[in-house]
Image 1 (cartoon, rainbow, N blue to C red):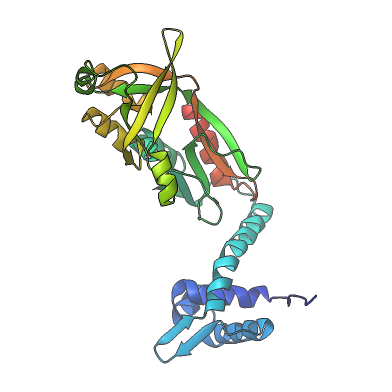
Image 2 (image 1 turned 120 degrees about the horizontal axis):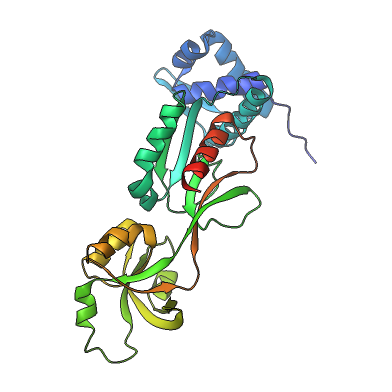
Length: 302
């Protein structure tokens, strides 16, 4: 089996810096290293790997396909190595540095602003960025340190802490309920449901009728629902239900106000509760800023 050549980490760092900063001059200023040194490092890296990584010209450079592949894989790996080195050598426990958090649209609407403001006031050396992401993929490769999501997947690469459990309520507008008074027994309810990226075949199947197993006053019953509208966030679903598009299953915290104000009516609760959780990767060292953020959110919302 052909052995992979040993890569000079200094040469790799130089290559990544040139790509990240858009050229040898900018990388030279950032690293405070001569351009000739960076150029030599990149050339030596190409010789070690026996591939062309950059196509140079008088106007600059462009990445070759091999250069793009190396940058994509090495960038995350080197960031992990730097993080490990900082954790092992830095005795200052002060949380600092960038922190990227994936959150759902509903969480952004209900909690994120005030909650995250309190965190950065407590930890002013942390730069917190929150990004809407309704589903969790590979946190590390997608550049996230933490995710706050509903019912995360059961995977060994994730550390999950439950924040709170909520009921999912079947809700509909008074206008829709009134329009169904003359409906024959068993006619499906029009439903507004979450959108998912999927094939045309799966989309058609997901739009078919479904059964919601509900409880009301301690009694179990079933409702047949037929998707008529698919939307990408629970906030959008709630607004569509208020407008009369159909019924939906939504968390208690999202519909408390419209229920109180008479914009929605509760028709039942899903038999199973769902959980809001905070998640981080188990494959990387937990930095001071991640530890501080997770502990803060658990204390505030747990």
